[in-house]
Image (cartoon, rainbow, N blue to C red; front, side, top):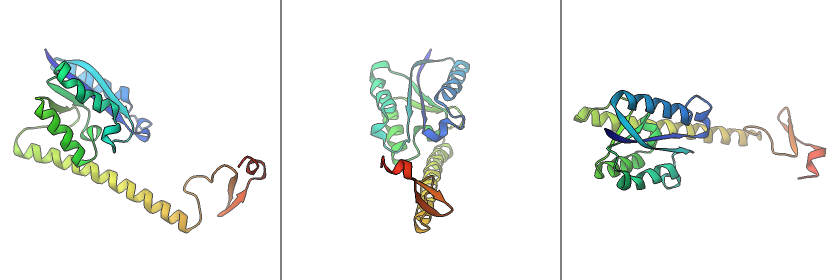
Length: 175
C-alpha cells in the first residue's frame, strides 16, 4: 500500500466560503481511496500561510516525514501549501529531497517540463492574487483614512452619524 500524509489549510475567511478543513480532508480521503493510498496522518493549519514557521501543522508534518516515511503529501490545491513562491519552493524542495512527492487533488500534474513550469505559474498566480488583495485592502484603508471614516465600524465608545464620528456617552465612560 502507498503511504501518504494529508495536509489542509484555511485562513479565517476561507473557512466560511466552504473551504473548511473537514471539506478538504474529505476530498483528500476520496482521492486516496480511489488510488489505494493509506493516509498515515492528517495535518492542518487554520491561519494565513504567510509565516511558514508559525504553521505548526506544516512544520510538524515535515518533521514526521523521517519517522513515518510517506511516499506522498496530498493537499487539495497549490495555495493550500503556500501562496508564496519562495515558501512553496522550499516546501517542494524539502519534500523532494526526502523522496516525498506532492500530490494536489484538484490540479492536473505532470512531471514533464511543461507540467513543472505550469505548477510554478500556479504558485506565482496564487501569490499575485494574495498580493493584489492586500494591495486593495491597503488602498481602501488609505482612502478611508483620507476621508476620515472607518473601514468597518468605529471603536467602542464612538458611533458614526453620516460621516461624523460621535462620542457615545454611555460607552465613553468605560473608554
